[in-house]
Image 1: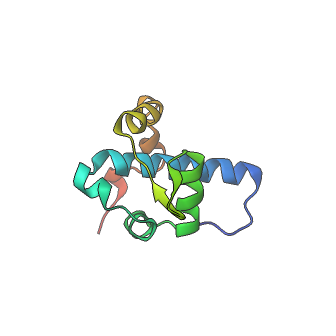
Image 2: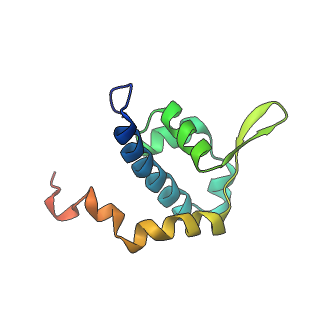
Length: 104
């Protein structure tokens, strides 16, 4: 899902930070073969984020480029890990999900 739009500046900053972390963490967990088969729709489905929000976040992370008139996703593992490191250092995922409170 996504929040109601339009977002305030603060709301956009908060969601962009969350979406960036989720995308980077997802990329870091994928194999090279899986990275090679990414599509915007697959990312949106896997992450539960609207395609337009995935696209804007990929643009923000500078992971979108033009290839033969179409948009392509470019993932560099070293860049992903470098961008992910500050999130991990401050235990970012702990701020929005506490597994011990989840139950079925």
